[in-house]
Amino acid sequence: MKTILLAGGLGTRLSEETGVRPKPMVEIGGMPILWHIMKLYSHYGYNDFAVALGYKGYVIKEFFCNYKLHKSDMIVDLLSGDVKYENDQSENWAIGLHETGSQSMTGGRLLRLKKLFKEGDTFMLTYGDGVADVNIDELVKFHKSHGKAATLTCVRPPARFGSIVSDDNNFVQEFKEKPQIGEGWINGGFFVFNYSVFDLLTDDGTILEREPLETLAARNELAAFKHDGFWHCMDTVRDKDNLNEIWATGKAPWKKW
Image (cartoon, rainbow, N blue to C red):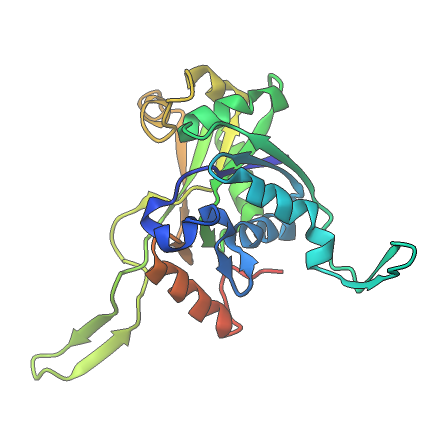
């Protein structure tokens, strides 16, 4: 099953980083967040990717074209020009890098990739700026079980600040640093779609999260896979720093590999 990664947005809220690279290429622990997302899917055996490019898409192209260089030791014979790679840590991934327009919306980018699929196909899609410890096998199993056209993963977002519970004497009973919010669910990405979703996409201006998903919900064709575990998007520098701090502990929840 192919996985689409939406990686073409401007990332304006992270302009400190995105002036020189697209948001999916902002690094956690020295590797782009896009790579972290792909590693999660790969852990569950899904290694066929299509990356929907837009803003500064050439940066993503160059990264993957030179992936072996990034992830291997090298011996270069300057006289002959021969290059020998050692300790090669390349991934067993097939990656399509597709230009989907500099101004396209999420649904528009997906529509441009319709050519990759045929009637009856099922595929996955997620955003290129959020990591989670979603069990992809369980997600796919859930989608196949309900027979609806689409599944989205709903998550509890992390609180911006830590939470404190105190008693009547003002003694702290519980302290949690940036916990997942206990109430309310939001769209966390990690979709599974049947081919029929393309019927709801009109042009480059289609926003997937508006009319297409709203229509699917109204038709009772959109199911929610509830994920109570870790989920975190990278919208701001604060988010980036927080994710890097989590990675530095060596216990990043999304690191399943």
